[in-house]
Image (cartoon, rainbow, N blue to C red; front, top):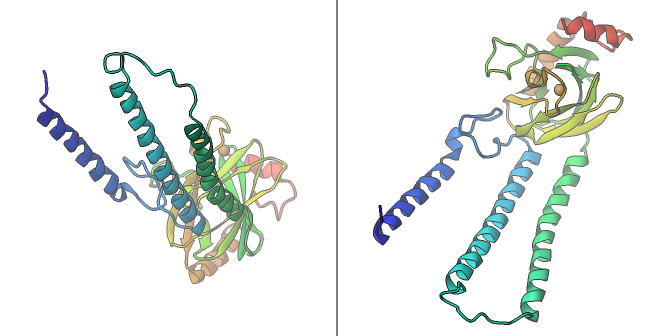
Length: 285
Ligand SMILES: [Cu+2]
């Protein structure tokens, strides 16, 4: 079937309208702290670092869109203006100083425009501000253990809870932190390399046996925030979610009190027992 120019135009317009509608209604798909159906953008931000990551991502989107459209324009021009029919006698030009200088310098300027915000962001992620609280997350096959060395020295295991929602993200014991406080997260691995990741906070850091890594976040919103181990770590890699509950200061203080009692007899408590290998076996049952 041959389409007239008008029909083709209407079809293209329809496609464009659908695209714009999808792009602008992206917010409708987004759910704070967890993945959502048909989500294609970054997860909603709940920390200053994730705000910066989102801004940087949007800036890169502008740059790559402009470059892609520019290259597409050049290609279309070449195809239309310089095909054998339209241009039977090709020019024999081999050099053009102005263009050569431009296509060297403009990419340099673009790369510098990307590098400056990129390095700024990297340093922000690496320079941990004065922490209000430290949580040590230990990756184990296949669950996480959280220790609170500043708040009564307790440690507990956090395992996937099959009956909890969201599916494959809910856990029995969540990591709990106060809102608007700088949380230093230290990570290590008990067996193999795992990776501690919470998209809404913009953090992702390897948990390596024999090494202590650290990162930080400041949750600016209360609620539940989910992440997953992001380093292939064995058969149940997909089943060791990270669930962080962000609460008010008072709720956090109350939680610390209950947690201290609840996990006092936890065999996984490495502060209480020097033999941590026994605790791994006990908790993995
Ligand atoms: Cu893992």
